[in-house]
Image (cartoon, rainbow, N blue to C red; front, side, top):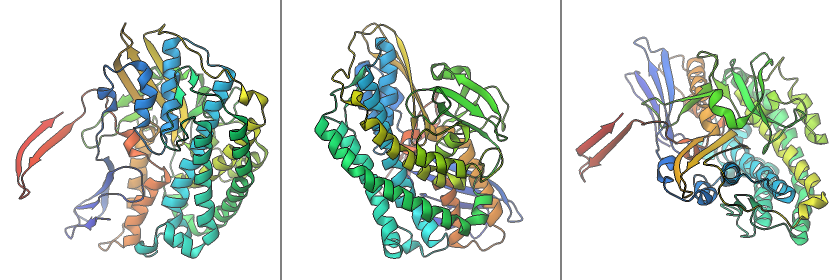
Length: 483
C-alpha cells in the first residue's frame, strides 16, 4: 500500500486504495490552515467496453461483457441477455427464468462473502487501528478461525452453485446464460449436489450475523461518520414490493423513507436517470433526473434494497430485515450498515435458493427461446450484488452492435462514495499528524460500498484521457490529452 501524507499538508493521496476490486485513489485537499477543504475518490483505470463492442454480433454480448468482471460476471450476463431478449422479442421459458434467478442469487452470495469476509472483516474484527500487516484474511483466521472458515465456505457455496448450474462447470465466467434463456437445463443430480451444501451455508450465514451484530457496538463513531447523510435509495422490487434481483420495477425512496417514484419501467431508465462525466475520474456520475444536486444523488446495492422494499419473503431473512429496519427511523442512512445488509442478503439468497430448488419446474427441459432479431434496440436490467445494473444496446440490420451503454451499480454510488470520503476526512483529520488508522478509515468507507471499479470504468460521450509516452529514464517523451 502506498500512502503519502505530504509535510506541507496541502494534499493527502492514498494510491492505490487497498482491499477493493479495481484501481482507485483518494485525494484529500487541505486549506492553508491545514483543515480539510475537499476530498475525492478517483477511478484511475479506463476500459471502454462500450466502444470495443461496436461491430460485434449482438448475441456475443453476454459472453463479452462477462469479462468486464471476475466477481459479478453472472450479473452482467443476465442484464446483457435480457437486453438481447428484447432484441429477439422472445419470452424466456419458465425454467430458463428460474435458472437465471438462481445464478444471480448465487452471485450475490459469493460476491458479498468476498466483500465482507476477505476485504472488510479484518477492519471489523481486528479494528481500524490494528497493525496493517494483520489486516487481512490470515489475520482473521488467527483471531477467529470459525469466522474465516464461514467466509470461505459461503464464497465456495455461491461459486459451486454457479458451477453446478452451468453446463460448462465454470465458477467464473460460466458462459451459460444466453439470449433467450440458458444454454442447458438443470439436471436432478446437480440439484441434489446443491441441496446438500445448503445446511452448512445457512449455519455459516447465521453465525456471521450474530458476530456482526455484536461487533457493531465497537463502531459507534464510524457508524455516524461513514457516509451517513440524506440521499435517495434506488433498486428494483418484486410485484408485491418484495426483495428481488432479476425482474421487477424500479422504486426510489428519499431519506425520510417516502417513496418519490415507484413502478418505473427499468427499460425507460433514460427518463429518470441522468449521466455525467467529469475530468478527474473515469467513473460516471448517474443521478435522479428530476431533482437538483445534491438532492438527486443515489445509493444502490444491499443498503438501498433493504431500505426500499416492503417485505422479505423468506422467514429467517425476514426476521433479520425487521430487526435491521429498527436501527434508524425511516430508512437506514449510515453506509457502515452496508456490511449488515450484505449478510442479511446472503441469508436471504441461501433460503431462496433452497426454496427454488424444491420447485419441480426448476428441472423443466425448455430453458431457451430462439428467434432472429425482431427489434433494433434492447435494454436489460438486473440487481447485481452492488446494485442496479443496466445494459442498453442498439443493432443494425445485420445484427451488429452500433451503440452500447452500460450503467453500473458502483457508478450509481459515485456521488455517495465521494461525499463519504469527504465526511470521513473532515471527521477524523483534526491536526497536523495523521495516524495510519485515519488513512485506513478513508479506505474503509469506500470498502463499505464494495465498489467494483473494473465494472464501473465506462464511457459517456467523450471522456477525458491522458496518454503519456515515458522513456526508460522516466522522462515524458510525448503526451496526448483529450477532453
